[in-house]
Image (cartoon, helix red, strand yellow):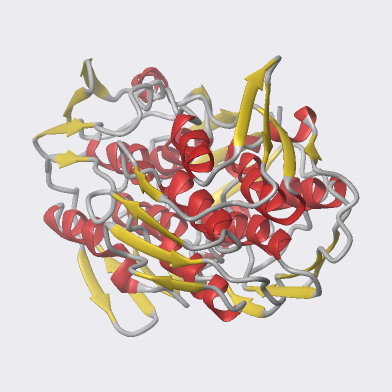
Length: 428
């Protein structure tokens, strides 16, 4: 495991640039399988999950290359395989979403059960039911999902929960289905809208993306296009919290502030001063944060991916906060690690009571998943002394050039082993 050392106490100041959306890029890369020709995606983040998806597309026979300017080129004209191997899908849950595009293109797909961060139940039932509603025969056994259909047929699909992954997956598969597909109780995240924009540019007919009802009218074929991925709102949110917890002054450029409104509202409640223009965010704080309650919900509620870094900040806030996690029941697993740093947090089911302490203390801690690792980094930036964060490769899955960006802002960070397989260290 790679280890990040952080010496806390430095006030973060300066300017960084937001990277492209991890979740958005992964969904669009999978959707690129729908079209023959050369797809070019710009503003992609060079992170571990993106390289896993590159390996996945190559395993299916697509040509896929990343260059040094945060661009990936995908040519899925000749797909030589419709089977997604277990060793790739187990590394990243988003790999599973190649099922729909493969099925739509080739009439058959076999994909291993997904892996990824252990943050609680994230069943693939919504995905499978959606594909079945479109007329596919689906067989699930021996750790694989096998789907077959001569022609997908448009249908009414109701999601019991507004899952972003399932919404993206069903919307993508429906583009080549015959007839009209309506997705009810659809997720409304910005990444859904970005995927719809990409698919529409390819020739898809989609209405309602960003609302609870999405309508997809199937077309005969799609064409490869060039598309710029939206900024990563979770990365931006993490650096905004890092600025607030260190009483810093940080500007983040190339952001989409409207995607961050629920998060920014709560960050203002803690006392942070936030300035926003069309593509720049500035976060300033001159004192300890003030306690506030948060409840995670699907978009446009407070995002579950920001719960962990936000709790790290609340752990040194003045007063007591109550945090309720409504999306993933095991997302509080990191609390014991924050407690090692001196945090006073008590969990009760899906809620946690966070009594702010004056300061945290540096300690050896372990990242159990992507956002838990981000929370530990945030906490370490404000802690007294040195922290050793083991398992930082989890964080590498979602944050491009983490230590380089933190160093630009004045943080004292260093990695024990800088070898990141397939990833080029950079100053973004």
